Length: 632
Image (tube, rainbow, N blue to C red; front, side, top):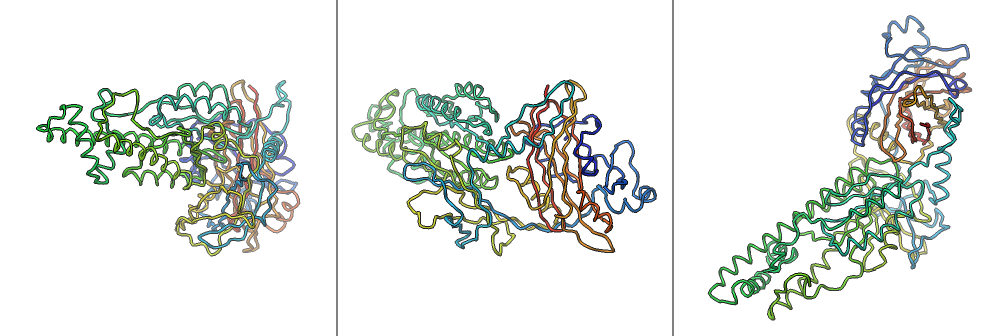
């Protein structure tokens, strides 16, 4: 990752543009870098600039950090013993306390017509964790207006400076919702693919400035990364078509006509009737009903069933693996995460662990999966595909129609499971795919965010079942997550704290346990390069110091991450600020505040800034969003 520069200074200094800082050292893009960065943040923070804090005449700690000159703790103490023991930014073996876990549940309430219900209050909701009623400690209402207000508040963090003739008046809409639109082209036929391509344009056109959408497919052949560019998304839609990896066996002769459902029933469910039906069909279409060839026909039937099972399971395997890839990509985006799966459905057969793996991965990443049956209001497939040769006999036709209808019906189970297991919606049995896609992917007009701290929670990492109900309004339908994983207690408290910071970094929610203000600045060094500074003013009175040996002790972990306008990680860093303040210094900082400044080398563009601060003594956290536009 690219390392930034950090400095400590007084409040009056920190909010003004300073001098240019050193050039960026390295560049790392992609969400994989985010995960790597978070695992080794504290270690990498040691590689950032470190300096020697001093106390100015104004009584405020300040430091200009340089890589070229690093003094040992003993040398620094001799130069200025009081200050060195009061404030330092080197990495330490700080002991973290565990933070009380706050579980947030986003709820959408709809009436009988499917419209979101407005004007509900905290007392209208009840939340059950493992069947036990929980007190709702936080309550919020999410509307298009509230999203716009958050974006405007983040835009205000940028200091407006006329620099090099560039006014810098442009703003950036902070991405708050990320929608991964996944087309199951492994199982779609061309007729359904054409229908969903047309319908999906409505969803794209409904995107708000704070929405980002990406298009993916289960074949892996269609990809458009998260963007707000509607034209680019509509162009990518044209690539959605039928792309079965294996497809149907015997597609030319259709002899014998065997489906994935029939193969699963015959081989995995030991349904001998199906083997007899396929054998009778094979005897007629290949051996002209010659009874002497019964054994040969039965051998061909067994082989056809096995091939159909292998082909269907292979197509399913492709779908599961690419769904996992999309979940990993979506899980690295900073904000609300929604995956919309457009598919005709497919059979589970023996791949139940793959299905549960998708649901489990989505729940761990706080991803809601909404599913849309691409077939719309379909009718039973009587007689099979009219484009293929007809091989049903008078004897087998009735059986075959039953198998086709059962296969069509069971194909929807996996879509229903994805939605039900993650708190999503399953749209089916309707030809209004435009409305279904809007319900699945567009932001509802109003949603409610309920927060509670589980009582007597065990740190065992187990899955907890959630249930949200309404008091006295049972006629409404409720969409909410079905559960969450409790935190797992770890032996290393620092690892636990690092996990909490990681989760906060990839959220858009503001945490206000600790009072601090955030401001962003930039200084262009060249046409193609700039320095982005993130200035944080921390209200020392809101921190929880521990008194020991005549000092006020506390340590803050400050994590800053820079994302581009589409939510992709650009750069970031983490630092630990240790404070061992004398009473007179604490008194001064209580009036002036403590200001930290981190600087990062970036290219001109639009950026989202996410900063998380954690207090080691109280285990409280704060998190805020900022934005900056650096003109080209």
